[in-house]
Length: 507
Picture 1: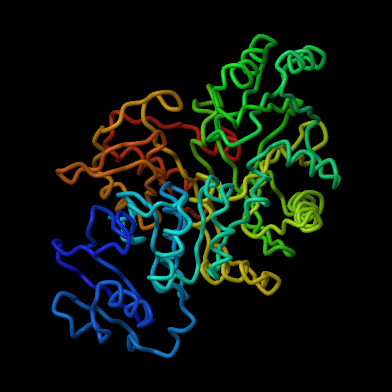
Picture 2: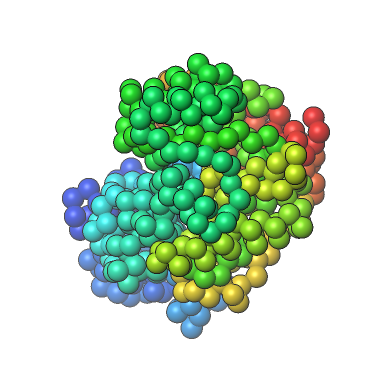
């Protein structure tokens, strides 16, 4: 495979076509890696250079391997832009960077860890909610595939604008993204197309909501209708707790407009699992299974979080159960969205409850993007060319795609700032990350909430900060490797769960 890397002096920064738009992480770029001449042309055009062989530029140190840089296969390779800056996006960049069909990976805004890992070139100041700025960047740099990581730009319509501009985009339209953007929309779709889900009612009046809770009894689930950063779901074990959740959303506006409607849902007893499927508008293909750990504390105690760890595969999702999920939940959703005039293109992430009393799956919620941290374990196991697969989804060609996965298991343990999911301090130093990764070739640390201080030290700037991930021949080996790496990280101000994978391991 042809490849090249250019090392650019630290004083050289690339000028922005628009103020504050095309700046790389930290204002300059230390390296770019390409596999074909097409991407070089975009680079030289952007910085005002005459197009020529990169070896003729004195500021570029070029490394080529295996084949001539200007080979005939370059037309099949693509420049990819990943939108987002968390652990999920780092995992996507990691997988895309390994894709033979990928020229170069950009990530906007990215984060310091993604940038320093070499898994992508981070564009810190690209405003990802400004469609015009994103389109301009894509046109300037010859981007042939945009992968949208977080839900907010999808719900805001970024994919719509990119597709209208002729830029292949993996991610649903704003109307299709309502599957995650409005739990009421999702529930009504389930009702209309016979998709199994928990019994529910939607309310805008707190007194009516409380009366319904009183009639149904507890435990019961209170959900904000809109996007609430993973914090808008309360499992109320008492009437007082349910009433407090209702008031916080409908009276105190704790989640702003996202909580202007609430869904009161029956409490389902059983085991949760995450199910992912790639969708091209008509066809859906399942990804490998994964299981998340939402509660902050060991033994599934404490408040819900965005996710404190995950593993793949999840033993509870047998091949038989996977078939049931596809037939009763995923495919009816895909067909229903098409019938509603909102074809879904992207990844459907179904949060499932495998009911204890029936052993059958019910849909708890939909997300319209890869889960975080489930994406980390899936990308560690994926052996297929991710860029080619996602382009097939954009083109409506998933019917010809088959996915290859590494055998064995993968596990991720999230390291978070003390205080999360509540308030936490920023700026604490994190050490020994390189040493932790070097414990095994099967270990990878994905960065979610990191930055670099003036002295070059990694510091924590988020709630969930690191996703320490490892593969193994089986889940026991993956667990041993991941916790060895976690213990090697020197971060006194961080914490993590000690029991990730407990269901599969019967801890």
